[in-house]
Length: 276
Image: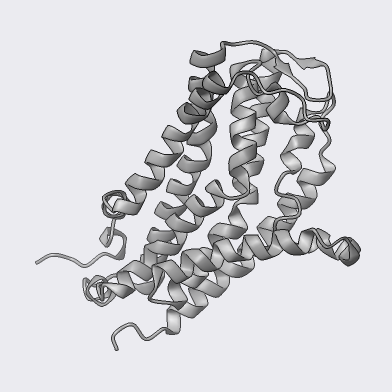
């Protein structure tokens, strides 16, 4: 006679394999890993970028591998990474509901809270791999295309390689925190709707609307509470002396929103009818 144990239901490795085998996972990772090489090819064919009057990361993108990785992260933060994170966290439950397979998982039996927790852990893990994998692949592509060297700042000056690697770790860590609110909203929508496209699109739509509102200067200090207002605060780590204020505020906003949205997701799933 086999004893039923909750901890043995839906192991993380099983859920990880289930999600990894989905076509959207493979396509998302494929795009993120190929993009840096496409950008290197674009710079090689187009030549070194010239200054356009306003100092920016694109002006120094070809100076070194680290410069290129920073540029790749900059152009991906506001949309590509948002889509990837929303895809992993928004598709995980909604797709199961759309396929009517949630009822069979619960009949295993897997407690609702554990089922949701396991799916969230795996979805967030893939999101972390996406956010970390892009700059790492960009470093590899940049090293092949432009070689190693100190980081050249758009405003002038350089940051030594050793210091720059530490700054890069801070930047990636902050980028992960900034994407938490996207992951949380996508996950909440995923347990609310049976449409994966609706869950992913809703989270991406939040970012678009937030960016539009952030451009309305008439809102004044109210913009500080928008989830995307501090998304690029990691650029403060590129100053000669790191400025922590923006990143601290951004992290506090993102974590606060995420905790509320994750709690709402678990509360919603606890009472959701998934057998009709």
